[in-house]
Image (cartoon, rainbow, N blue to C red; front, side, top):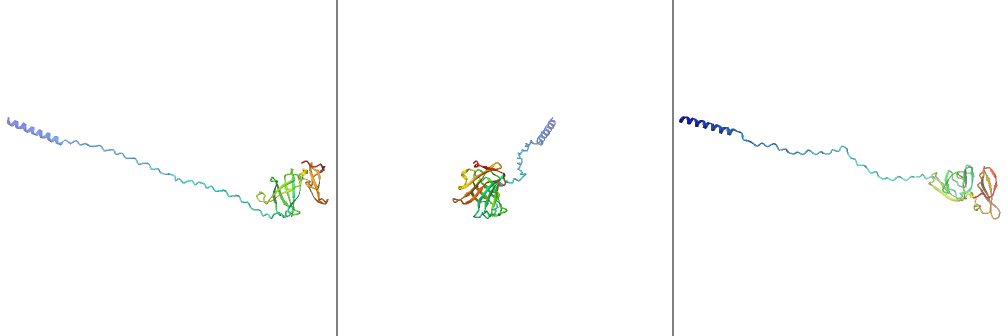
Amino acid sequence: MKFQRLILIFFTAILLAGCATQSTALPTATSTFLPTVTATSKPSATPTSTSTSTPTLVPTDTPQPSPTFTVVPFPGFSTMFNYYKGWIDGDQTHFYFLNSRVPNRVYGLVEGTHEIICDPDPTYSYHMECLSDFTEWDQSYLEFTFYADEAHTQEVYKQVYYTEFGSDPRYIPVDCEAEFRIYDGRCYYAYTCYDKQGNYLYSMDNIPYGGHFEGYSAPCPP
């Protein structure tokens, strides 16, 4: 009986020892932490310039050069330069000047409006004749302005002359005889002037030489 008790105690001790061993062998629970997610910022996009911006040049306000005119050599009219007479032939008016002594063409304006072109007389080169396409003159005192160039930029002479074209009796020179003639349906005049002693001085007219004379008339209407 005693032996059995000993055997029971022995086996009990063995069982207790086995349990203790098994309990020690169990793995200890270890807290394993999941890896912490670290927020990594995405790399910011660096803007890449695909084109080089070239600054636009502001245009400089450069003043336009002033036009320059070539000065036409002009010798000047002689001191004896003067108006002689004028007449109408067809659709042109002729103005004749004495002692111009200018070898080249001269341009001009009558009353600042009507153009004239003047050339030396081919027969008497010291004088010059001017032509105008205007024929409806209604006064005798006309202003002539002469230019050396066709553009009328180089004025060389200006003067008012009694041209004999005014048919108003107020324009008839003193001590002159006047007669009026019809040529091709139009009235023209002719003056013959004398001094106080009755000596002939000069004559003037606007008769169109080469026109068809149709007779005499009373004073032309103004």
